[in-house]
Image (tube, helix red, strand yellow):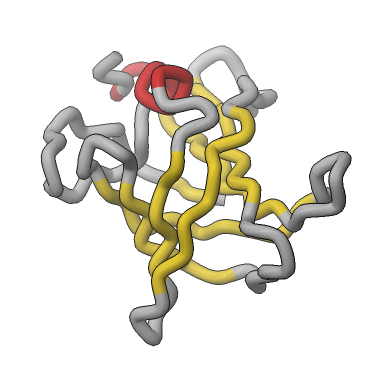
Length: 119
């Protein structure tokens, strides 16, 4: 899970705390780059960005589910994730249920105070 004070709105290669849900929805099915700590880079498709269950009404919660290429599996770790528009984030991502076709998925969960939501 990624816990952040608030999402930031800078883009174009600038680091942001977390992606907004709106930005994820706008990039569904597009390729993102996941970079590991050792510098390996893998293209992964944003398969879904479902709304999550927040702790209470003062929080926002949603996820980014990335479908990995065939034959690739990655462990739970913090990845530098770069969107098609160049925005990037360091997010903890966890393996979750594979896609219907058997491809591995990594999921990052965003959870933060609604009062800090800039969207």
